[in-house]
Length: 325
Ligand SMILES: *[C@@H]1O[C@H](CO)[C@@H](O)[C@H](O)[C@H]1NC(C)=O
Image (tube, rainbow, N blue to C red; front, side, top):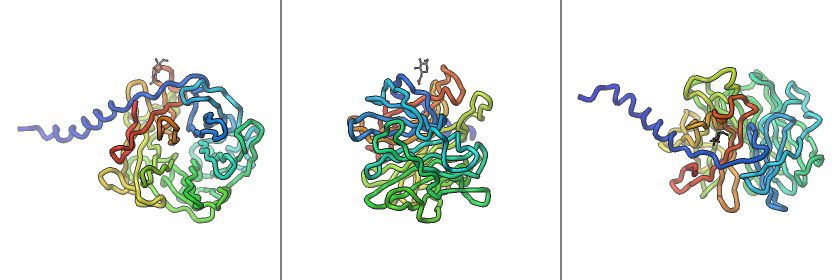
């Protein structure tokens, strides 16, 4: 007789086998200490710019993703025009070229607070000193709202501009934006929700591939692992959902709605990689779609400031993105 615990542990064994299958990140040299990375390729010369949380959205550039990355400066060196606590400690940049300008959406908030806003800074060429801070894009929150206005992610298709955001609180929402991506023009609608655990999903990134819309996001506890180590399996990890529409209907591989906790793991702790998240996807001229993220290297150290830039090409041949070594 097969003991019943066998059936209980079987799914765990599969999960363990899968997570051992996650590849290590490709190498990174130079200024690789980042948190919540945002990545863009400059169209004029093909060089890469890597934005991250803290130092008023610090950024670095490199000729290739491997580096060497060189620090460039800060996007909003005077602090944000948004007059909220956190205006000098900006988070989670998302960068996108819209029209002839590079847009960096940043978050103004403080840890554990729902009083937040998403701001925008633009530049024609990504050079230091060329940034204009536009302040709030009208995506704002306080404790009376179901969402938290952080982690903006612009998604442009033709003339239609959308911004995914949030949230930790009630997870991922979406608004319509005006054509130049400077102001929200609709109320937020919820597009993903995790009912289990602490409902901690945030940092969405939408990517279109092969006619389908993929919604990547981070789930779990993001950091401060040196002070407060999460229970095993509760640390940051990256999930993805898929839909035939950018505005909703996202499901996991078995069809479970992503408003009910569906989705597939794309990257999670393995080996000396711990707590990967804060991700995005870049279309690379040689590698194709590339997943990029931050992670803790447990051999190096557990503090947020030691988190590193990781990236892997994605294989979409199964219809679902799989990180490649
Ligand atoms: C972690 O850091 C150690 C020491 O620098 C290095 O040998 C190892 O390759 C790193 N692992 C990853 C996944 O970056």
